[in-house]
Image (cartoon, rainbow, N blue to C red; front, side, top):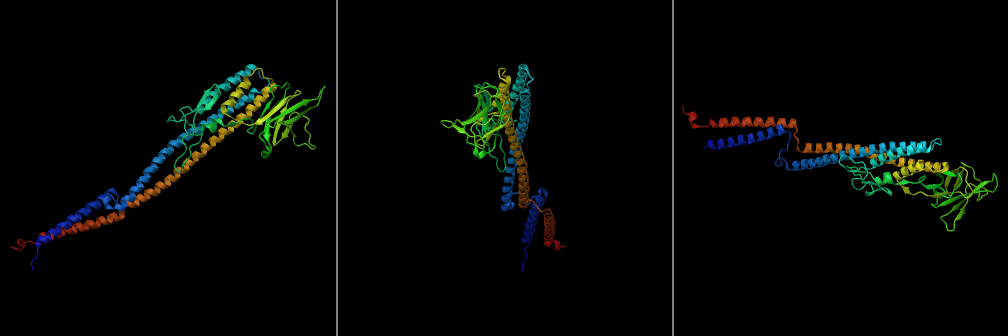
Length: 410
């Protein structure tokens, strides 16, 4: 039988090459710490790792956007806090303007200070973030969403609030809702004294007692003074929306009487609402009641400044105007505080989104690690095993090299 030493030589050499290649591959895995360094190593694992990396990149991008949105909302919340402070200052000045001991010059000085605060408030409404985006631009607006013209302040943006998503927040607040949609009067109805009144009648207090009984109609409360010194004063209420106007019986009235006696400071109640009149009315003086309409924060301040600056107004007219201004300033302040609360809720939502994204990141990192990372204990064990095989191949090759006839010829 003929033995082929050349064939044994080739087989031993190929075994060395295979062992050397396997050892080099294992060394690369140990160096990189990855079980999959190229797609050919494990196509399925490489695909799983790529999907995880793509999702991680998306989360990174979403988090970057979230930080920009958080920064914008933080600035908006801070601006609303500053605006609330300005409105509080305006309220304090309005209250002080009602001091009967102040002169016209004193009230003029107060009006000038209020005008300066009003300008600050308007600048806050047009505030922008570091990227130049208006904080209160709504669904879209020019660089300055509010403009101040002869007819007053107007909102030049698109009213509405961008919706938040699972991974994002609005990048602007609805300026229309924050600054413009302030209900006039007490929020349900307006009170005003008749323009032809000659007495000292005034009123600034009104509230809703029964919302289901409200009609949304216009009313006129007319005061009648009996002839003679010390004549009794009565009042009657008419619904002027109806044509012809109809008499409304004030409540409570047992038995019902259309002309109750008037007592300053006593509530006049009808159709689910209540108002309080003060002062001494002349015969025929009226208090007009109308449904509340929509005004804006700047118009409220402008009306208050105009009332305080009016040196021709009587004390009762000034009390009426200041009382109305205080009520509407409070309404506007409540609206600003509600908007600030909304911004705070969004900031809390940003924290929750970030927490969820961190959880997703951990999960995806674990998925990627399972797909491509190397188990170091197993990797070292495999390396030792492959290295032992490589050394055995080298020793086998050395033995094959000795299979030569010349080694037996002495």
